[in-house]
Length: 98
Image (cartoon, rainbow, N blue to C red; front, top):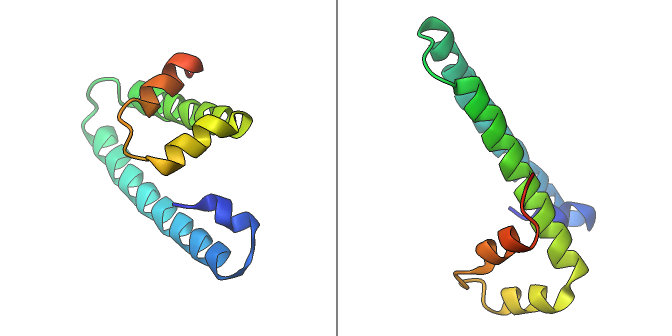
């Protein structure tokens, strides 16, 4: 999803907003169903796993974006070869989510 296009306006921004809204609605419906199941049949650490998984992922994405924006050479290298297998590991090593 290219939310960065939302800043530029135009058709790409509208498409990015539509895609984001669709994904958000899908995730909300999924989580509501899952929460309903867990309320009816509680088991395990659902709340803990949900919050820690969300926060870790959010911090990883934020840190990765910040690192790449502050370091244009690695960003250009990654854009030229997005299939690089070690990119996420390097980002985790460089600035891990806390």
